[in-house]
Amino acid sequence: MARPPSRSSIAGLRRRFITPEGVDLNIELGTAGARAGAFLLDGVLMLGVLILASIAIGLMAFASQSILMIGLWIVGFFILRNGWFTLFEMGARGATPGKRIVGLRVVARDGARLTGGAVIARNAMREIEIFLPLSYFFASLGAMFTGGDVLLPLLALGWSMIFLFFPLFNRDRLRVGDLLAGTWVVHRARAQLGHDLAASAAQSTRPRRVFTDAQLDLYGVYELQTLEDVLRGGQTDAIVTVAAAIRRKGDMPDDGDDYGFLSDYYAALCGRLERGMMVGLRREDKYSKATRAA
Amino acid sequence: MTAYVEARTPLVNATRFRAAHEADWDQLDKILTLIEKRGVRAVPDQQLLVLPLLYRAALSSLSVARETSLDRALITYLEQLCTRAYFQIYGVPTSPMKQLAHFFARGWPEAVQALWKETLVSFLLTVAGALVAYLMIAHDPSWYYAMIPDGMAQGRDPTASAELLRQTLYDGGKDAQQSALALFASFLFTHNAQIAIFSFALGFMFCVPTAGLIVYNGLMLGAMIEVFASKGLGYNFIGWLMIHGTTELFAIMISGAAGFRIGLAIAFPGRLSRTDAAVAAGRSAATAMGGTVVMLAVAGLLEGIGRQTITNDELRYAIGLVMLAGWLLYFYMPRGKRDGAPA
Image (cartoon, rainbow over all chains, first blue to last red; front, side, top):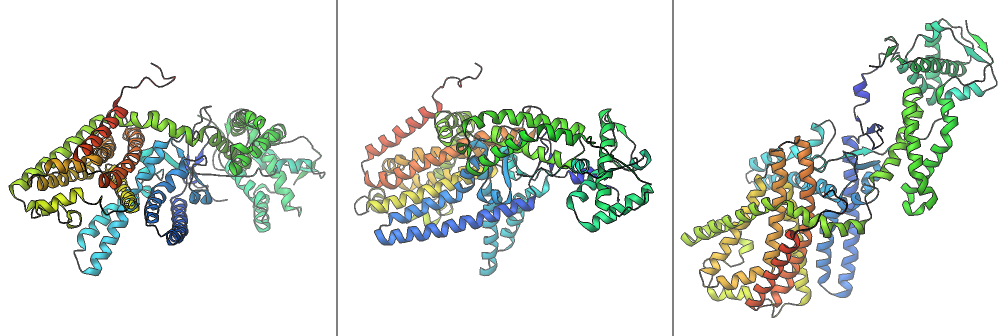
């Protein structure tokens, strides 16, 4: 097995998040890509709503022959532009439809309730994050086509891009709005409880393999959990390869039942490492010795 | 060589642990799924009552599992279960109606009150801008064209006759339809509200663009006043402006003040860390700014409908002053301590 990747890169978007009960929930932040995707989805949905509402208002205006409908459209456009994000994020789900589809949620960084003020702050800042770069972009385009002065709008565009790409410059993927509102966007994980690998090995009627201490001393926690992934993944070629590697290292004969062998080895190794943990000894991977946690 | 043994006792802590608690986790998972899919109302009361208990039991399971078990799937499952339960128990805001009631009763006026220094600065910048523009144009009318864009002037420039200027103040009510006025009002409201939001957001850049916007607003004000005052229409123009202007200018000043607050907090965080200062300022300033959208809707109605139908100067002054007094009283009236807050 290869040297385990450094912990920080696995836990790149994992953050401490302590509940009032004092337990770290170890939440996962949304990636910049997921957030951009959610924003695009929201944009498409808003455009859809705008088109449908415009057609409806247009028909009503045609029927009633009243220019009041234009006022309705203007106010509706304002509410759609400024209210879409704010109103949805103030709701119980803490997410716009786009964020829900992608599986994101807005959360206050301090673990408190998400307040209306925070939601307004994070979304008002979209004015300088999105609107400002966009307007400079169109100003540059316009200058290019009309042959006006391109340099100034281009410089302004470059400057305003700082705000657009702000999330890429900090560890927590905070937008300017998140920074100011004290919020961050977390990944809304859902996981099913997988079956118990050790129990299925224990409950089957066939006899269980036993391993010597030397054979179980080959690996640490990292290898154990990689083995767990292999077993849960259930890919035959991975199972064959891993079983062969373990047998070769532990000098064990091939009995033809790779999955059964790995399940038994997993349960035995897990039991042995957990017994170590009971007395405070934890062995991170095959390269390290069992140590007491500092 | 590999030996075999007939053993039934579980080898791994996760197995024992799952057997003891899995039913609780399942129940919590079911309640959470129901809330997430259909809302809190879909959940029967007795299940809601056990939700906090199940949540804390799951938290304790998570703590124990982290210390004693190496089954990663189990820990991942418990982490997401606890996180989902946490969001439902702690993360959900109170009902929208309650939030709205609190906003108007306390949240907004208190946020505006906290901005009084910045609001004063906004006010002084506006006055300074207006004075400068007034004096400059009185000295040399050509400055007017540098300050007011053509589209906005609509013929109201230093060369216009007194008669034409008078017309712009009192016309409109005669031939305009009610629906056209409402259209005008909705346009004014959305336009101004967008500017208010923008001036708040610009404050992030260390206040400078917001200050520019506020001063420019003052410049336009002073320029217009000078044009009308030089034709002896100053009193009439101020009445025309005031009916909605006290509300509208106040709202713009507050949103500018909100922008100043965040810019100052980032530039001079004081005892707090820069991020903490930004968050504290951002939340309260955004609350103040959010309310100005309501003020601007009122101003839009006053301007779009009230001003065009009310052409009496004194009545215009009266409405403008009453609105101003109302806002001042609403924002700065002393309020008791928050319920339950330590005195």
